[in-house]
Amino acid sequence: DVKVTQSSRYLVKRTGEKVFLECVQDMDHENMFWYRQDPGLGLRLIYFSYDVKMKEKGDIPEGYSVSREKKERFSLILESASTNQTSMYLCASRPTGPLTYEQYFGPGTRLTVT
Amino acid sequence: AQSVTQPDIHITVSEGASLELRCNYSYGATPYLFWYVQSPGQGLQLLLKYFSGDTLVQGIKGFEAEFKRSQSSFNLRKPSVHWSDAAEYFCAVGASGTYKYIFGTGTRLKVLA
Image (cartoon, rainbow over all chains, first blue to last red; front, top):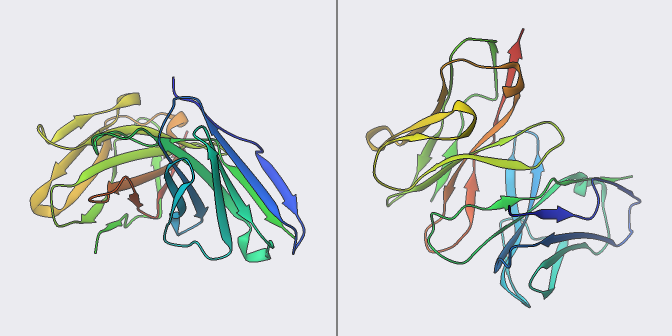
């Protein structure tokens, strides 16, 4: 079974803090994704990575950065957290291959910025 | 541009009743379509997917979906809903040339006992 884990289920941070969200997958997948989920907006892609040290902006990258130093780990960084970044953050991974392969999701991190 | 529309934000059904969740997509070529379910406080779990062949796709937990190219739809169905089906359901299309998905805004299902 593919397993995608996220370092925290719930996180509370203060405005201006630097926040790290960690994601680890155990199936040697090349591709990893960070999404943000908000009510009524569905899932929106923040960043994705298709290889170690490779990254590409998604639809809403502003205010975020990412790091992928090892294949199994993909980190989302909020350089200076703001209240409008309060949200559910979901990580996903998938192998390189046919487009029929699905993405596998972690349980999510609910971040509150006060 | 590629897009996915789930026109129903909330749906309420009685336990044992049938269910249909709507999904419409906009895509230039043959789409790769997915339905995911998210139980409260959980990540997303794949229910089923379509990429070619038989237009009626069977998934897990008794769900099925039908791809209708003429209507640009990929509706999810279940003949008899169980209370444990209460969750949020997302339709997604695989974006061409990449591994990215475009998600719909989701449909939240409530099941009445």
